[in-house]
Length: 388
Image (tube, rainbow, N blue to C red; front, side, top):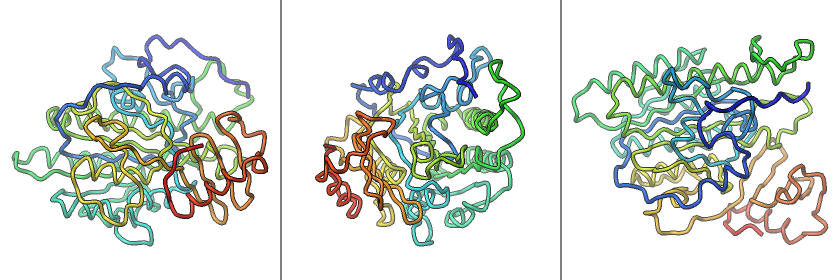
């Protein structure tokens, strides 16, 4: 199939239609964060969410944004990113949703999610509403949980839970709400994204994926919009985190450890304490979400969360330097480690300079044995270190 032609972007959210390199330059030098901390946390994870099919990363189709601002659309995925901080260099730890979620929530080894336990110990109500059996065992570690077969039912149940809390007296405890959506991920639906440039004789899996993603975006838009309508003041004190768990495979030839399956959107949205639209290029992992939330909400970091807090990246009130480290992903017996410049695949021992060779056409391990050794050591010990 030929590449779809780019369309007019006059009504698209400002700042979300330029190439990624320009997006990354956009976020430098944000204003200091005002002192209005979040109270509630909504963590929204989306299975199969590929960064390379999202408008916020320059994808030309209307998958994650709506071009009709006159209808009051405020909370599609691109606008959520525009109102917060987009970690444009976020990578999943696995091409499989269950493994990624386990690491994000700190539930490695089959135990209760460390993130839920830490928030509960700090006096938060915790609840999980998830689609599909992949997340069922993890949801059981929250104080309240419900597993549905379809995303629409999951979001409806989450709305009812939030509404009950919004109607309580002002003295109610804060909450951590985890919502997990199982689409867009194979098996894909029968719909195809309406596209005047699409040849109906050459429909491929990407066309079905884009239609599924657009439908998921509509559900997200409604979900977040209802949260605001229920109680605008409380919504203003709600930190919304959106993360893809891994990308959906659209071609059998796609490597499980490719960027297509590991590069995912990660957004922190809380305009009351994060001013300005920012896109940050630091290489980060989904494992960093939990420690970031704990530091932000001043909750003791439990040992089950293995990442590092990213708050120093976008909070000028945090004086320490961010600990730089590469992103690690594992798929069976193979694994890869990715820094800002380098990408190493094991056990092949294949090294690529992704900064100079984004398509990874030239293998360079023989020329840089020191880089191979350093990345192996960092992956083995989760050690930190500046990219070379």
